[in-house]
Length: 306
Image (cartoon, rainbow, N blue to C red; front, side, top):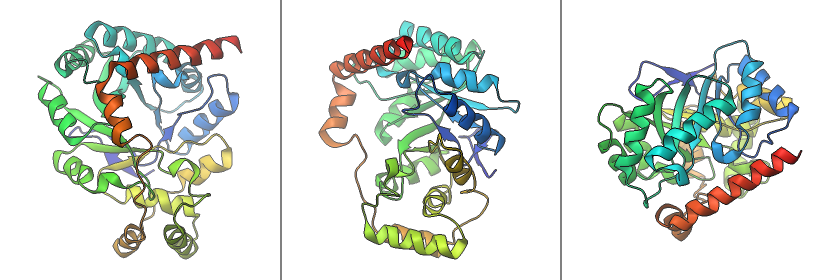
């Protein structure tokens, strides 16, 4: 599997990993998909306490023989120092592991001082409970503030929405991350199914043309477009085995520079799922954190009744 450098560390992660958003906590099919995907080289598995499926990921990890890079996220309503520490312990228990490879702040929470949150994250590194610190859905300014709040560690990654249809990060975020050696982890890299339900005829036409040229599928071309950019890894979600295999084969070959430019010129300027006023509210209002907490409790309660 093609790999990507993780921040300024000497570590490398798979260019194509596996996301688990909306994977149910009681799915044997998802466990099998994660196990087989890891065997195919997609040994980066990303989850989050907010997804309410860390137990399922933990069961998958116990069925995988090879080494896996485990990434999870702390929810924004847990950004107080003591809550970060408790949330990490809870995630470790659910995952059934001793150390989280990449612990990420799921969303900015401007109602909690970032210095307090990052103090807790560095405590977790010092205690050996996490290895690396990452963020998710952070703007450039928020990343700068978060890094400034750290005394010893560095932010190694920013997980953001990125696909051929949603390319907002190409305006300035991608260049900033490349310059600062922060790895971009692209979530929803297949635009939540838009590859098979195209939003842009121009983009779809180029995807299909390049897929035929390289004997690949449009989805594989779409993923290869992302990882052709320096410092970018992608984490598509797949529970069907044919899609797991398809995703794994999106790496190990390269679109030419001209082909990448053609896809970029075809359009795909859609907005991220959470943007504009919604994103502002998500980051600045404590009511967002409370809502996320209620949703998380609901998912866990539902999973427990199954």
